[in-house]
Length: 225
Length: 361
Image (cartoon, rainbow over all chains, first blue to last red):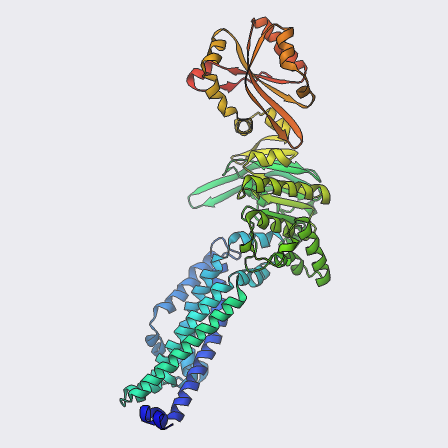
């Protein structure tokens, strides 16, 4: 105990704040990830099936939706944070703290994930889709039970990649009042020159990223062939 | 079973329109194995996809399982069409198995969709996998199977719903010759054991001659020849059919042989080069030695072969006949009276490297 205090004096001193920061980050990351998975998959499916020659091909929607998605992908996250302030206030009542960070994070990540889901879904062989149609399967069933199932490796992989981006976004969001490890590391580690805090924050973030990667790979191994 | 009437299908591709089908009509009787052969781009894949309406037609009618308008699948709404599709199995060139599902799950897939109860699914899948000889592989994933095994799984899956019709879209094109043969044997077994009508699309003559009792030759969206397989290819009326027949009888090699010195000499001496086609009973007679003896002509065999159409052997013989014109004509008349198809080869044209068959039979 004594050695920890000598090596990392500030970490011990601000332990309570640090713990709260970790919890905040975990909440931001997990809630954002959950919402991004839902919205990203939904929009990804829509993007895939309205494309030319696909199950619900629709030239008009296919001219509009991908453009909107690209628009949001083009805006840098830090700018998006500022740009979305009024919208965030409208949705969650505040633009700061954990809830205030989640809204822009979801909006920043969803286009990214939906594009990746779209790509993996489009990789599902049209022959397989034709086969399912030739058996008289309904289109919703083909999308939900055949396409998602066949594309699941790519989908899980894109979730893993996005969860890592989300950790990075959560750190950035912390800086503009979101709280979390990023905020803690900047305010104490950088602002007050407490190098040990920066160091331990980095370790915690790395552990978080690697464990998510590990969980992702585990799920991947269990579900695909 | 299937009655196609005057269907048209055009693909709009930007500024150019591709006319895939231009007024195709054909009839497939119950229990038949019907082949459609054509080169790539002939429209044959479009044709088979029209039968289960994976492709909608521009005009025309397709009756499946009856002649009344309820069975015209070009007019059915989506929900009824899906029911109709479930009565038609389909197999593909690239198998189209679900890679994340094992053999058992792949075969069970249509049964799961139609909410068959679990016990029945288990029994049916076992039956089907035993039929195709892959019950031991039920837990394997497609990546662990050979091409032939994958197609067997696909066939089992296509049969899961007890369809009346099986559509085969180039099902053996990605397979080696031995595997092709075993898959064709399986299709024949399915046809005979279960009484399923099969429509086969192929570009390989071997597929058609081995198992199809009837055939249609498709060229540029039009059926140029159709009928009993043996009749169509022993007596082609269109040059595309003739090319397919020639590839089967290896007739393209005739050219080289005709230009050999000995044959040239016979031709120069007023001899006739001709093709004899023997089928059925005519194949059993010693015709060559008989006409040689009885009509005082010399018959010089150039080359020949025997091709099996299903179980029927078709003998194919190129000969050079020399003798007096009168005797040659009598010999030919006799051969024709014995049921042998005769066609004279125009050797004058060989100088322009174009031997063609006279249609005087």
